[in-house]
Image (cartoon, rainbow, N blue to C red; front, side, top):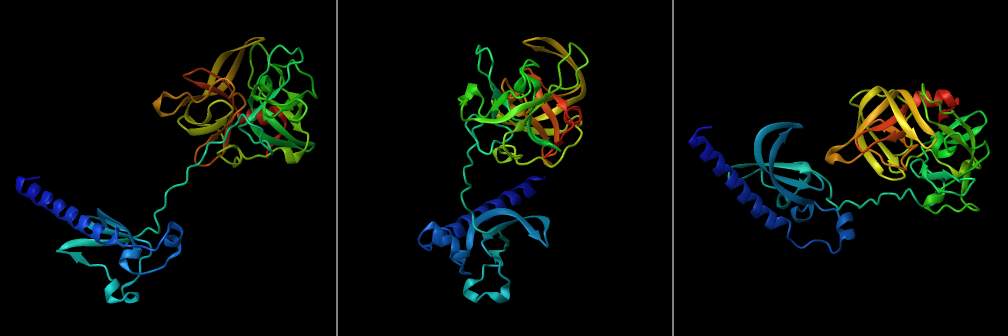
Length: 338
């Protein structure tokens, strides 16, 4: 851009900003209907009521960008010219500067959404919340994550890991499952939501899954809607670079990216080291935040955008999270997502 062109451009920007400032002061600071609620329901074509913003922005014609900067009026309702009286018309240009009008509706403050607390008692219990078993020997208390609600012809079940619901294959069918887990204040006399039904035993090598199910004591005690995320929209295969998210008992909502769908890994458990084949690996999102931490075991992992479930989280490190392919989990347990 030549010096003369640059000077003209800077002059135009200065004129646009000056015009914007003038009209902003004229319209946005005028007296309005008393009160936020009244302003929200008032309907008037008068510019001091209808204009909710003034900006220097690109002019749009027939929904297409033009590359031309203009003084833009944001309005609650964009009226056609024949609907307006002369006193309600906005200028078609301001001292030769282009003008654009865009309907935006009312600008309101965005509501603050509180992140759900997965460690409290939730009824119906939702995937993403704290669950766990009682150690028969009373040597420890624990909590993991309710992954998903699944079903077969006999009923509905809490899905999580073997090590979350069956204590690494050491518990027997019928063992009570609590929400929240006892580590998070669950009450043994009041907070049972399910009973251990089936798990896939862990082997020293060749594992594909770490999973178990517990039959809900009542269907109205459990839900399929993942905390903060919503119900899964079916299942899908994981792919490298897929963007995913989960809600877990410890780190709550996190976003990550699939780095492998065919990883063989050795994982340390209390009862020994176990090798898992063909696993999914996931790294955390921006800022170096881990995708998961201890206590998130059992979380359902879903593709962002589609909410299709792709994996069951069971292990990890600060750098990578490990998950079973959900298709392997559902096949091994002979269940389907609710």
